[in-house]
Length: 142
Image (tube, rainbow, N blue to C red; front, top):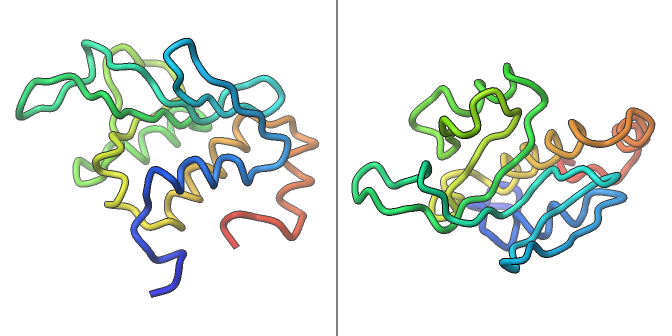
């Protein structure tokens, strides 16, 4: 199995987000990573919230990462299948983002994760930066 087919990890989230051009990272007051392009967040690690709970244990998820989506259709494409690890909550209704519990990140390949991160970056990057990236040789999706 090559690296792209390997199960994704939390380290891959960080490495892939940082591999996107013009990305900056800062830490929230709780110390969680927030990845931005042009001052706009595209991937960030969230603190536990009352509205994101394990359906079996009813305990709050403490390992949620949020990815920006390019509109409602893109969001629904990721969350509508209950077999995928992506989800949303009422708090994020109408917000163009999806959530992923890191305990389930390995259900996606590194390449699938790269596609989600690339799409998140493109949704937040300027049109010029997006075109330059898409036309360039350094795409994280190969």
